[in-house]
Image (cartoon, rainbow, N blue to C red):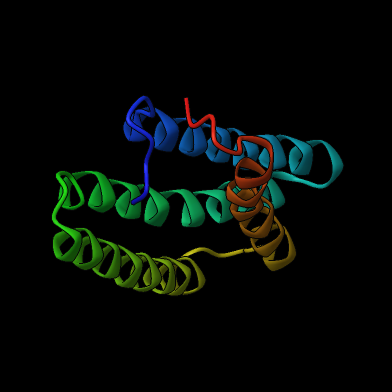
Length: 130
């Protein structure tokens, strides 16, 4: 992590996770108004499928990447990314296996929108990280 000394990684990651959670809940509220409770639940689950693995990745990056040891930081990012991928797949599998009825369009739409929050932060929050 090439982080400026004045940037608090925990604060930056927390802001992204809160924004992602808010986006997922907002899509759920919109789904409730435009469709029904099944769509709303599906959208909220889609947002959570994105937020939970991202929280794992953020935690791994902060805990495992603390200090200046480049190998340790790289290892933490690999473990975090692999864990994020596995958690995402497991959460999708669990939702598809356990949740009936399910509105797949709302689920995937909320997931994609929630994931896009990271990309928006990368563009808008360039270099500030606070």
